[in-house]
Image 1 (cartoon, rainbow, N blue to C red):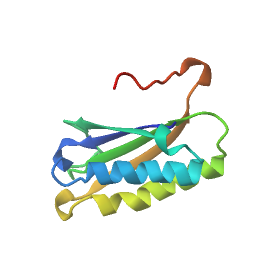
Image 2: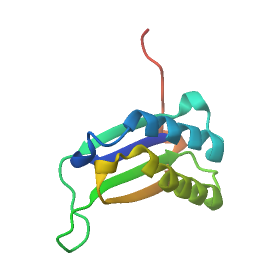
Image 3: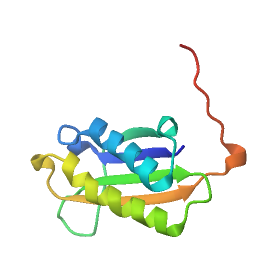
Length: 120
């Protein structure tokens, strides 16, 4: 655990090292949330259209969501958010242009969550 979701603007498809960023997110979760490495699951969702702000400037968007079991301190969650925002530019190419980024760390209901490795 945690479940990590990264939504990103279509415009970043060729400028975003998603695998590298996903591995970095997993390492940050292990370091800052005391997560088990094998339990970190990161998925990426390409967003065709996003609107940021109220003017004509076009920003790309990256939104990172962490869903974790309860028990992490507010300080740990804040440190994770800051670390993610600090790491992100290293995975965006120069052609990315302006990017609005956000991180949200929420809690899962442990009674309603199940996970398993199937097959193979």
